[in-house]
Length: 251
Image (cartoon, rainbow, N blue to C red; front, side):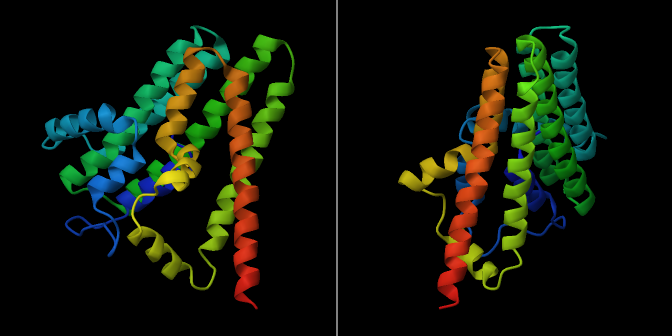
């Protein structure tokens, strides 16, 4: 249920041929990227996923099974929020289980040598559907809690901001010189200092843990507002930076 950047990372991770290294030339080592990609999960969920994947390596369980299980966990979180059958804290546990499955499916694919384009497509699309679905459930629960419909406005702002941000990323990929820019960014390694602080809210691991914290403390409207604000600020800043770069390139 990761957010859009988690989806992109998953797609890059799984769209490989078994036996061929997926790390591009000049990119930082996998260990360095894992540390920056999972600043919180690397202490618990990542090692646990590695252990479970090792135990399941020779089993009949495949990464696709784990991906579908993660989608079911996302559905469990949404069901708890919409029906009110349990406190939001229970939904946080479902989200945690889904995030663990998202860490496990890629690890299992690497251990079994079963990474594929199909796995990348399935994982990426279910992640995005789950993210939208859970936030819709958060909006429904928040709306019922406050007895008003304004949380749905926050949800629409979140969806619009996320769409514009992701569309901006996709359009940048078609710009001339984009491969060279991406290679230079990869060779620079993980961001540091103020750059790291700027990119921290973009980290899917951080956002998922923030969602779990909001669910555990029943701060549903606050989580929606934060998600909407983040994505809309992000696409505005990115559009301005890209437009400036394009204008400078035409001079």
